Length: 161
Image 1 (cartoon, helix red, strand yellow):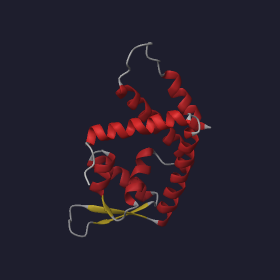
Image 2: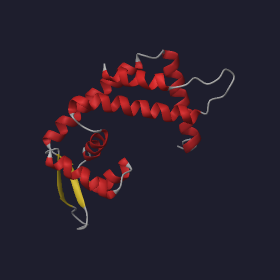
Image 3: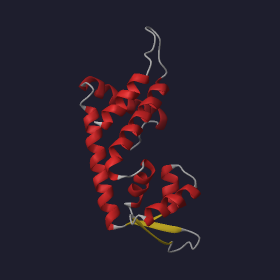
Image 4: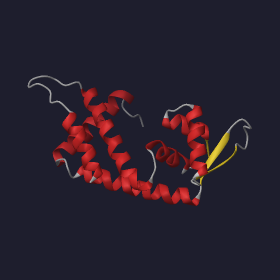
């Protein structure tokens, strides 16, 4: 229910392009990104996780990981990562330890509670996004897949074997 409200709010704020005009795809991509972030955050509501916390837990699932990996993956500052890791450790979701080879660094790993919460949050997110999928036509879903594939190819170049 909350997910459809987020999506509806986002769709209401969108203005349609004028007939005959070519809307830059970047505006649509940015809008889609914002809608998906909002839907994901709404889906995480029952878990009590913020989107950044969910992202950090997902990185830590490949534990143990250096905090540097969380910083790089989430695109945040080292100070923000330290604060985030401290909060998650205080909640008993991750365990922090000294890095085995770099005494200036620390590593994080999920606790059992962290694994359980991440598993539930992933299920909630999948359920919410699956619900969004049925709200658009099969043709629109196929068009989206095709458009994303073409953008991926244009940005990364063709894959070489």
